[in-house]
Length: 125
Image 1 (spheres, one colour):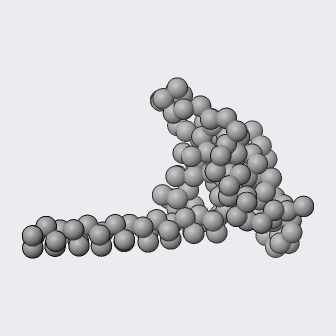
Image 2 (cartoon, rainbow, N blue to C red):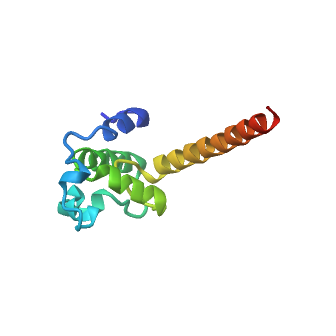
């Protein structure tokens, strides 16, 4: 049975085991340690005209792979910074990444407003 999307985000956000970045080989790119390199790439990217139930099932399976990946955070940040428009990256689907990016933009805007307001208060005070 499939879980609602919000619960899959919680699972993907807490990987089972992660090697701290400082313990990994710093000269190797992060993706050399990605668990998905050993799995079928089709699990992470949708085939054309994929039925919704099949897509949800495939994405959940991909997220389970991501959850045990030692470089999940690096992968997610890569996908958010690029931004990657397709597939499951770092335990998030493209739609979930769009939500994260929108929240980041909103948070950054609020921080800028607060900084400007604090500057005006300091200048007036």
